[in-house]
Amino acid sequence: MNTGIRSDAVTNGKFRFRNILIAAVMLVSISIQGIYLGYSTFKFEELKKRIMEQNINIAHQIMLDNVKNALDEADALFLFVQGNNITSYADACLNLRDEDVAADMLSDMEPQCAKADVKSNIVTGFL
Image 1: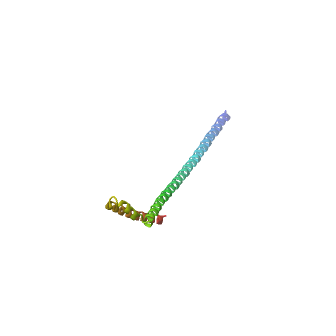
Image 2: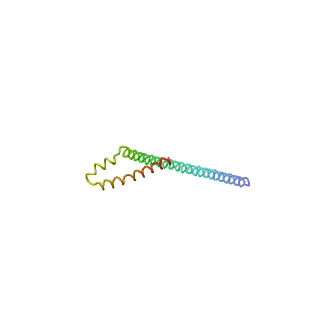
Image 3: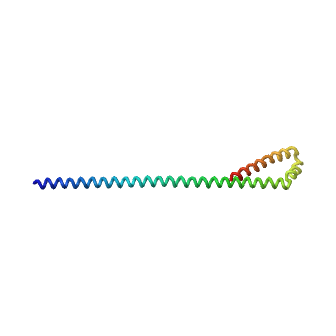
């Protein structure tokens, strides 16, 4: 009879050890999965941030290129107007209607062209 009791104690000890071992393995497994998921989430956020920064840099560069192209075209137009003396031609054509209005319109255009030239130089210097 003592052997039966002893056998039950040994059996209970084996079950207890097995249950503790299963719990420990599950705990280690869950811990490893949690670490892996945390690391994967961290890498995903880092990748997302890097892609966002690249997209912002590309959009910024495209915007700067568009501004530079527009200012270059404004400079070319200003130089064309200045070089071909179109302002005097416009004065002559508009002189038939109202000389003062034409002079005011042309005088308003020159500072704007000068501003475009300054802005173009600033953008060129920035790039």
